Image (cartoon, rainbow, N blue to C red; front, side):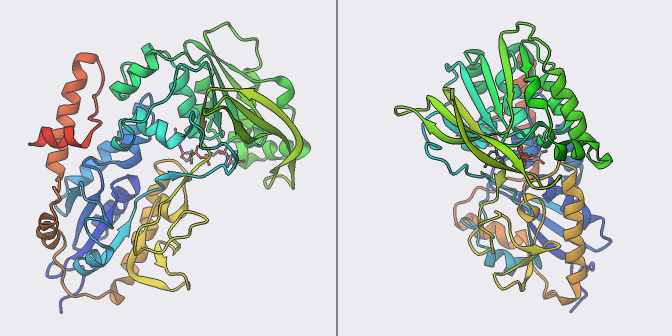
Length: 457
Ligand code: NAP
């Protein structure tokens, strides 16, 4: 049999998921020096995962990563099979039969739970739903957010919370020339939200915002960012944390929070930061009306400080709430999964079963491998590591030649799956850009799968 990864026997890899880690893994495989064929499978008709449906519409620079992915997608070694749900339209066993290796880069698709009473009251939403809704993700197209409420609460102080806060706080003029979904812009134009409370369970020195994202919250056209000076007093451990030269982001964050203690300038909206408070109960008759917060203090040494309840509570009236406390991966039938951490158990990207043994042929990268941390670029190193493991395993992989997508296309056709290709995505892309032009938007995204399919005929 010819050597795996040679012209006679190309290494065939199925990449499941078309977000950053999928494209960086594809890039690493193409650059490996081996002869490779990569087929990328995607559940939606459109590519790019969170870069399309997670990155905030008013952060267009972050979306420029798509230019890199587009270049990768045009490589001769690459095929895109969109509108295919792995686990439903095609099984993992079938992928393993038609490819030498299967690489999961399917991200973290759901949210962590708060685990407090009232969490599921009407009016209490996950950040995922809201972000998907304003970014035109078809799964969230029909979600309804009651923006007639004047007081909104966001739980969590990470960059997703910052995105949600900005979208709620910005004026229509600040959003209308972005690629925000049309339905979201219409609803936000009618928004009566006046106060947005952003709640952190730990202190200002432990907030997870990056400096740029936090600073931006103080530079909004018609919203004042507000923090209380007494809430910015730090305990000795937090002072030690911000004095550490490896922790300049937190030190800078505290400085930015201090700038929010200036008297508000009387803008129409207020964005209020709370620290050392945890939600313990959401209350309301049939829908959210109030939130009970417990005051916390910090325990344990610097850099390990954890929030502990003091037993003292306070009440905050609010009509809409967003839980932005981190994402979590979803299990896929036939693939090992660690329920607690929400990732596929792995060693350097090699998937492991419940006994810790490596599952041959199966790999993972990105958030489903290491959890939902880091910025877009963090996924490059993560994917490179996984591809390194895969290439090191080549001598041990079954080298029997595989057909890849040539075997999948007929299989999927018999199952009635309309597989979409990369050129078809480019057609959708052009159509979206055209739809955006009259509105001065970079694109008007399609929000329903049937509309996308209709454009393609
Ligand atoms: P994150 O950065 O991990 O922030 C989660 C926040 O939720 C933290 O403040 C955390 O507090 C809090 N939290 C967790 N469990 C909680 C609980 N039970 N009760 C109350 N608060 C709780 O997660 P994220 O905001 O979802 O962001 C995910 C990743 O995407 C991050 O790496 C982020 O930087 C990245 N991202 C980047 C951008 C950008 O670059 N512009 C935009 C969006 C997202 P503790 O610290 O106490 O755990």
